[in-house]
Length: 110
Image (cartoon, rainbow, N blue to C red; front, side, top):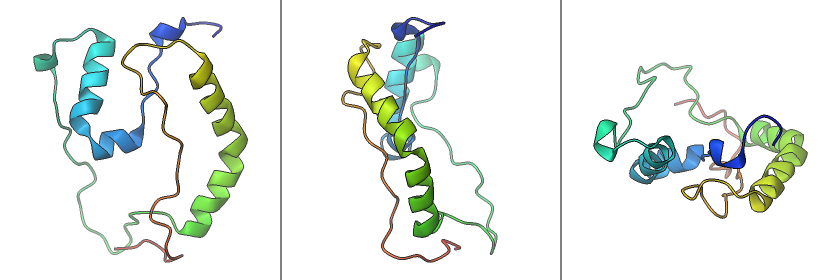
């Protein structure tokens, strides 16, 4: 890395934040050198208002286009994360991005 040492950057997964907030919080606290009691172990929901126009997930066709557009950059990220000696609390191996709930091409509106 040009401007920062590898141990000064923690790459985290949004999917882990959604799936396992306790482990996500543990990673963040340890990386920042914080006592585990100094911050939340769970994170509240945001954007909780209901709307007929609210989209939970983009349609599968949009997810596929985005996945294709970012594939090269994502492969470079996976390669970098595999090579670099990052902080001990970093996820290893880092999970690859996956399309979310792509069983239909509905518009995702609730």
